[in-house]
Each structure stands twice: as structure tokens, then as C-alpha cells.
Image 1 (tube, rainbow, N blue to C red):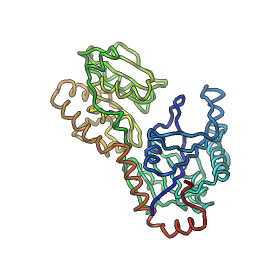
Image 2 (cartoon, helix red, strand yellow):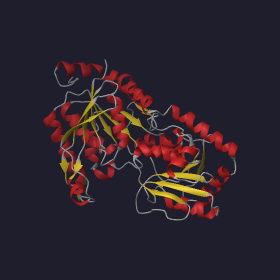
Image 3 (cartoon, rainbow, N blue to C red):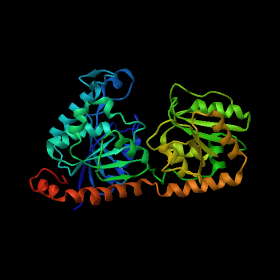
Image 4 (tube, helix red, strand yellow):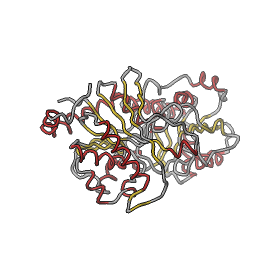
Length: 403
């Protein structure tokens, strides 16, 4: 039996004006391009529209894939109330749960499975799963799983009764899920984050440097991530300053309070997502001294562009980085970061080998490959186990494709 229709409960969905959770949309679009009907349920914040200038969206709109498949997006408006709790609930999470549940009830999509992105979305989706007897799969990729901070323990336990599968972006996320008691013996698979190889690939370094006016003879480092303590842009800046080499320059792509400044900074700020690979192409290495991840999309993108990587010697990197394509350091140790940069700066052979190995590893991390494995996992490891239940529900008109 094949899956025909998946309903997604996700923390957000991007538009051109508000490019949040791009990685969520890329996965859903790739699934839709496999011929599976996709319906998305998320929320949009009235507070962001009123106070941050984020453009409001319709409560229902259509996203279209590059291959012309249409994805239904249901996005009710809610009020965000940060850090306010009520009877063990995060009030914002309670409001989101009620809005999504109400919207799902109104739409009543004939869906085969509920797919929740992150555990806190899984708790929301779980209430729908219980009500409509729909199996639930959770995809975990959080830097730190927050479900137990947002919901009462009893609610979490009850709402995950229909959990039939877990997709983790790293061994670290799987282990953390188990340690928190969120999953026991449900089928699971580890699939690192992936990229569109048609967008991220090696380009001519010298042509890209000429295009953006970057110095041809410089040793250029790239950093992609929020300008916050967790990601470590200022630790990278301090490491570069310690080296005292004026030929070392840095491209910082991101935004946030810890914005780097200095003579070595070629760029510090946001760029359109389709420009990121061209900035990476200008670089010799990629450095991200991050403290916590699920699996870093930025690292996978840099690998696909053929860059050696300097990053953290922490468990979230173990599934994508090793000694063949990276130097792993204590992300809080500025001197270790500086030493790694200096080593790669002075060793052309290692630089070339690491870059080639990064590119080879990234070939298996294409979004197409990842989605094929997700669908195979759902159909063979999860869907097959509950085939009788699905058949019964389809016969009763509760599940199935709406095509």
C-alpha cells in the first residue's frame, strides 16, 4: 500500500518576504514532487505583523513546487505570548494547538499520516491523531528539544499515543529523544539534513570573487548562521584576530546582535538564499564554532560547495563530519579555532583533499535522496506495520487521497 496524502504540522513555512523554516518547505516540496498530496498546517503570528513588520498572509494559500505540484497551506493567525505559562502550558503553544486543531477539524483532509516537524509540533499533531485515529510520525532536528518545557508531562504522554515512527537528523537527536522518554521502541531512522544539489555545488572561485569584488589573493573564510552566542561569530572573529594575518578575510552571512566588525570582514549580514552558494564559492574554508545543533544545514551546504570545514567536536556533527573533511574543535576554545584555520591556511594538499571529501559526502545528502528514504521508511517500516488499520480507515472514508 502506497502513501497518497500526508498532512504536515510544522512550526512555520517560508515565503519570499519571510524566509523562515526554508528547510521545512524544501522537504515538503520534494515529497510533493514525488506525487504525494501534501497539506500543511502551521500558524502565523499577529504580533509579528503588528510589531515587527512581517507581512500578513492569507489563512489559506497555495505553494507551488518547481515541478508544478500544489501544496495547500493552512495558516491561521494567532497571538504570540512569549514566556507566559498557564497550568503547565506555554500559553503560545496552547493557542497554536487550539488554532491548528480547529483548522484541521474544519478542513478534514483525507490524510494517510500526520507528519510533525519537531517534537513540540508532534504534541500538537498528536491531539489530532488521537481524535481522528491517524498514525503520527515526528521528525526531530532541534538544537535542543523543548517539548517538556512547553507542555505538561501528562499531555505529552497522551498526545504521543499514536506515534508510529521517528525521523532524526542526527544520532544526537535520536538519543536525546530517548533520554527524554518521548519515544520507546517505535521504528526510527537517522537522516541528516540535505540540500538541493542543483543550487549548492562547486563554482569557479575566481569568477565569484571578481563578481562580488572580493580580493583574489586572500584566504577567505565563510560563516553562515545567526549572529548569536550559540553559533559563535565573535569566537571566529577573535580567532582570526589572534592569527594577525591581514590576508585572512571572513564572509559572515546571517543577522543578530553579535554582528562582527573589522578590517578582516568582507561582508556581515543577510543575503538572498540563492546567493549563499556564490558567497560560499568565494571561500577557501567554512567555519562554524556552534554550541548546539540538530544537524547544521549550513555545514551541509558548505560541504556540497566543496569546502573543508572547521566546526565543533560535539555529537551533532558526528553523522556528517569526520577527519577526512574537517577539523573538529572545542567551540569555546578560540585558540583551537585559530590553530585549525592556521593549519588549513598553510597546507594546500590537505585543503584540497578535505574539499574533495566534503563534496563526495554531500552527494549522498541531496534532498531527493533524503525524501526517497523518508517515503521508503514511511511505507515499509511504518505504513506496512499498520496496513490493516489504514485499509479499515480508508474503507470508512476517514483516510486516503483527496485527489
